[in-house]
Length: 421
Image (cartoon, rainbow, N blue to C red; front, top):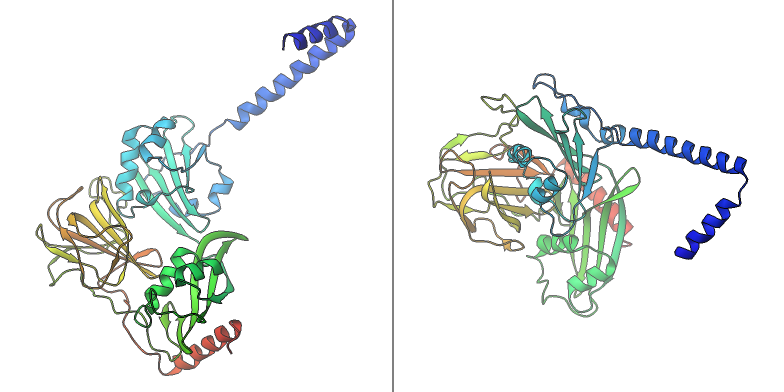
């Protein structure tokens, strides 16, 4: 390094005076350009706070992020916590708790995983958090927007995207799981197949050498990019020369004869019906702040220690403690349905465990932010909360009448795609 500096000094001393002056002027010009450009690049977007009556959260939908770049984008890594990220960006913990309070209705911040992205918009004058966006994938985002000085409201963005079919097939060699994995199916796809057909075949011991499978799976894309979301649309297993099938039709699965494969749900997550203390209300407002605080579930007057039952067959995806929701459980029932049970005293299940309809999964309680002992129960269909007391829930039915012709047409198209037509 010392030799390089000496050579540079010698070179500079031998330059004519005019060349030295021109070089200095050129260097000064570069510094000015960089300084001006740097100031423009570092400018923050001014997001004025709005009153509750003025805010229109639809303004902050999918394309808004492209029009108004965030001040900070943070990709979640293993070991990250929301608290550490807010601290890194010097956003007060009090602001984080305001966002968490808003998140109680959706619990999106509790499901962050490595690879998810957080984007932060700061007010250019106050440097306070004006907007926070979670991107789970290109088709699913949640946005928290500051409303006046009272706190935040949220908006969930779910983009339908485009679904492209592909046929995955193979022979069963060893376990079905490994064979399907080699064919290109994801773990979630394989779990969906085994869950749907578990009463038709034993997936651990039921296959023999020579058995085959064909599965039609669709991948979701948004603007040509894959989101990572997939959907099983048709299944055909050849097991000892017998055919086991499942076809997706209007969000439910049926065998080739049109008989429903999904077991019925229970309407209530309790042994007996208890008084409803608070009903589903997606437009509920806080009595003081007047901010929208959706009540995405149904509250039952369940004394502490009341047995809580799973309303359908499924897989436990979350068992967590939350500042506001308390101890809660989330269960996934196939690709379409999810249920949540909040403010529990004790959980009897663990993440990844399979459960059956009517199985005792917990005891009700008063944990988290709660005004009294009760059970908060939610039903989600296609990732959206619905009124569990009135929504259409799976019941084992057979396709009949005019629908049968359309169903048979769907089955024929799938069989042709699989080369079985």
